[in-house]
Amino acid sequence: MARLVVMGGGVSGHTAATFARDMLGSDHEVVVVTPNSQWNWIPSNIWVGVGGMTKEEVVFPLAPVYEKAGIDYRQAKAVSIHPEGKEDAETPYITIEYTDEAKSGETEELTYDYLINATGPKLNFGATPGLGEGTNLGEHTVSVCTADHAEHASDELEACIEKMKNGERQAFLIGTGHGMCTCQGAAFEYIFNIEHTLNEAGVRDMADITFITNESFLGDFGMGGIHFKMGGYATSSKVFAESLYAERGMDWILGAHVNKVEAGKVTYESLDGEMDEQEFDFAMLIPPFAGVGLKAFSKDGSDMTDTLFAPNGFMKVDANYNAGAYENWKASDWPRTLQNPTYKNVFAVGIAFAPPHIISKPMSSPNGTPINPTPPRTGMPSAMMGKAVALSVVDMMKGKATEPTHTASMSEMGAACVASAGKGLFTGTAAAMTVYPIIQDFEKYPGTGRDLNGTTGELGLAAHWVKHILHHVFIWKAKLKPGWTLIPE
Image 1 (spheres, rainbow, N blue to C red):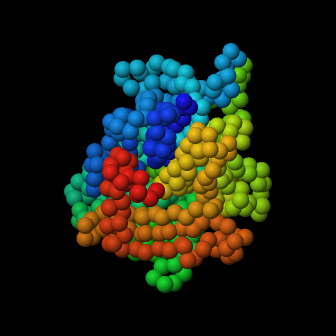
Image 2: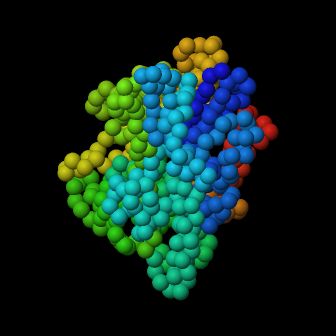
Image 3: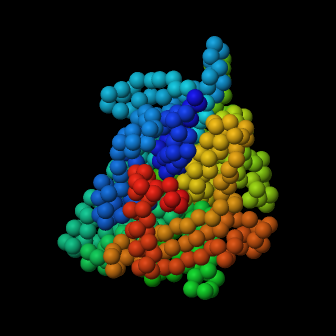
């Protein structure tokens, strides 16, 4: 009997664990280690953040689902990886620290035959002074990164709406809280849902709404921008995004590295090197991401963290980390099997793997401050990676293969995204987009880097209905309800 340990129970980890368990049968073990007791459908947090959904609608407890599936669930955080075992026992293991009430603080050495790192990111609020401390949200801004954060954001928004109803004008600042943030898409969705909610409340005329972003142009989204077909015509995400912001009467600040947050004010550095300030009454600033801080140790106990992990804390996989300057970057730099090059029984999926480089063109201010989006690796791509790695590991555990049998490269896969621009049965809107491939391949698709026949966009009420339906479909899938394996990632 072999044991697969999955570190993380988010989209990629949950997908990997549940598919592996479904395919392995009773001959092998599947263990999930995650510090969270609940699963969160993160794309719907933006609706919780405007009061359009409750926290309870976007989360559910993991324990009953894993018990039903036959998955060994440990509510704990992974602390360290020991891929060579110990000098007196060569079986590899991880050290975990329990976070549940019954065992809180207790540690355990958990052995594995195969390991999938799906820990996701550390929300690095501490990277920007005043945004928060370490991984904790600060007192000056709100967040929609977790369901609890989103619930808090909704309460703060409601307080602002009440002030506007009483004649007090409010300034809203939504966007990124650091020069190297990702998840511009979440900030994009949230600002449009804020604007829609204020309209529904009848107070839009009392609000000044500004988007602040580390993107060099609106619609970069950490993907270098997108050219897509919409309504039969080719357009760019830049034109699309600028039109949307202008139509809704919202301002924007581009190429901004927020370097300090104070009560009612942010200080930021622009790509031109100038320092400026922006005042606010309500601010939602996405924090930068980092690895969760896992350490790695060799058989003799010496630190070998830099063997498994890149300096940003994400795990090294089969990517080309020596691509060099931007002019040398290729789609083939991106990993295909997501297998660690040193330890063949270790994989990383979703946000946990270290990208070879960013996707957008790297930029920095004259002061040397990097100001550019880091690569998005959430949602559909994370799930596809989780499933592909699970299929490879299952084949290896069953003795059918000695090397990965499935691939999931972001340079070879497409993705679909439905970005909400306001929730409402008859008043909601969303942008439904497909992108193929996710990573530009200028050798295969000169000019745009992507296939225009597979990169499309539509905006309207129908797309909002699709997003709302997908909310229920993917929670059904995550709960392993009947037919869950038939629902695409």
